[in-house]
Image (cartoon, rainbow, N blue to C red; front, side, top):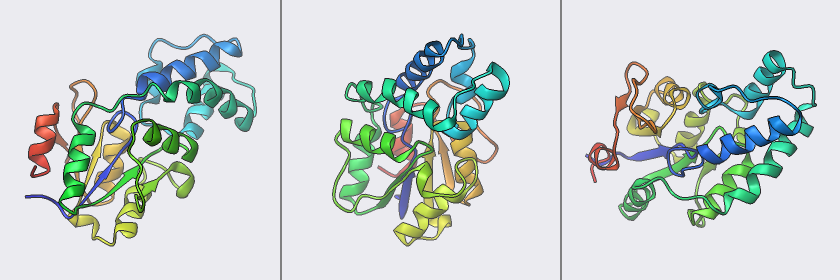
Length: 210
């Protein structure tokens, strides 16, 4: 059955942006003389910019102030954003739900500037669209606040909503918010306890009643 509301993560879920984030992070690290670790992707997937910065400071000796660091990273990222592609099947599902009148929102751990650039690049912007960035909440994922804010904006009970996310961090947030949570990782992996794990757009549509 189609849910009353569906709240989508952005990076890696709606858009295939994780490779761009990694490329920008690698370029920014190298620009300050830091060799990126081989497991960088796994360590930062779904994590907001602030905690990533603190990890880089404590473990790799990054000594730039946060504001200088994030400008450096975004200077690498934003020119690449126009090359973004949707994750196959995701935006089609979003638009199908929209046509049915299902309440939706994009719930991201990225900063507002990235949310707007990414959604614009794939043409997923329309009047009245609800988007929650890391700048719109006090606590980012895995805290439940981002998904709870989406439910509040949509005027629905969290128990009547579905969260869709590609990271364990994001799925944990959806579960903590009391939502049925679909974990759709980029590569097959075990999800957090309680999440519905899928591995294809076809499974996604079936879980959303499409």
